[in-house]
Amino acid sequence: MSSKQERPPSDPQRKARFREIAHGIVAKDRYNSKYGFAVDTAGAIAQALERAWRDGVSGGPASPVTAIGQADIGPVEWALIPPRPRSAFWTICLFVLARDDRPALGGHLVPAITTAGTAGWELVIPGRSIDRIISDRTIAPLIGLGLIERDPDDLACLVVSGRGQDTWAAFLCAWWALSRRSH
Image (cartoon, rainbow, N blue to C red):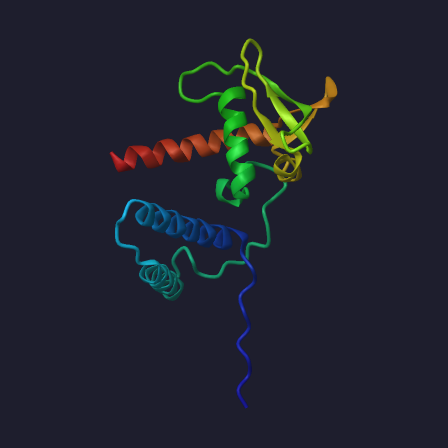
């Protein structure tokens, strides 16, 4: 009798990498379709699967690892933030914490109502009118990951946490290194 091979444990980093690859394939195909270029979705998926299989055989990035989850301290890996909350977090950090040599403007989120009439959070930046309300359902995962927290001085408001600041700094370092490699 042959025994069943045990499946490797679920790995959030691997799953996030695969999700990013899938998003890239879909985005490229939508773009190509919109502008009349050839679309080869099946070919792109086959290439991604082949690359993942080769990496698994060679022990590369897609090989099974025993990471059960993200530690509760330190920065969160950027790819592990779900896409819509990640986009909102990027916007919040860009205004509140800044990047490059631009000064941090500071700011916070205050309760608001979205145009759809649901609970949300408005980004408030001193001296600026952003006019951006983000759905509570988009902010909730950021709170769950510890990237956004209640303002200790005003519990009705939300601010970027220390972990959120570390995550933004790690993202900027990785982005800067990646952009330097591509030039």
